[in-house]
Length: 366
Image 1 (cartoon, rainbow, N blue to C red):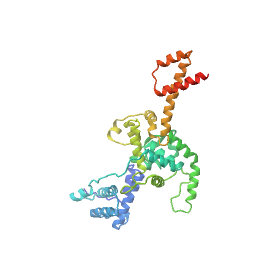
Image 2: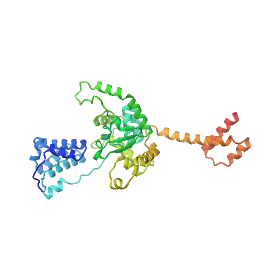
Image 3: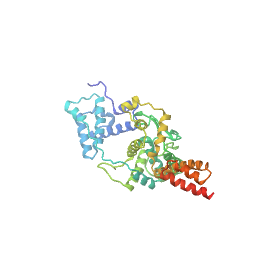
């Protein structure tokens, strides 16, 4: 059905903004439509007066020859087809079938392993450690993370504002003890880091930093991605067909996998990730206090550099509790025979026996 009015690209983008689409999405639409206008040789502001369906297929074929991935060509095609439809351009049956054909999204990435993360943490600076541990702890999208403000962090809770969240679905994410420690270290040196970064960029042609940069990590998505990619190249660097097999988004996948393995409920994990599936958005109801409590109970599954420390601390805490209980019981008996009799009645693990032996020796010294 043809419409009486056609919308120019600026008008269309403004409509998207009114519909609360994210600025990142609007920028993507602007880039794709500008590239399409350039391809057919017309000014982007008058693209709506030069809409011919065959041009879509010529443009997509050209992108494929340039090496754009199936996912990328599918995204480009979808944006352009939608713009045509908004402006009342009709497709015949064959054109519609081709224009709306589903593309195969076959990923060639690989799982992010704890050993890779640990090597990257060893090689990077305080800024990089804070970013990596934050992404692993929260499951945040990198595009959201680079737009977070200092004021979005309250203790171990971080507010993802609707205006920076994908689809406008904001919420709260949480910091593990480890991530909070690395973030504190970063914040203590943040001002000096910004001064040095700005000094290195003097004379370079790039967007200037705001006079008072209130972003939590004080960097753009591009800078964050470059830092992560350089680190990955040093510790592995394996590539798929189109890009590295480990990317910033791999941290989000790591969170999804390991948080569940560590004992967090799938409802909690999906809620933190703000996935908007039917059941999750309609039926799952958890208070923020409950989410935080459950997250903290299972946060050790998301530790990177504290993994071995966690295991050792757990065993040490257990032994200390056993020691305290045994000491209290032993101090209530009066002689060696009563000690042995008391011990015979207690169910003992090998760790208990070791602890008892040490306690008996100490008591004999006294």
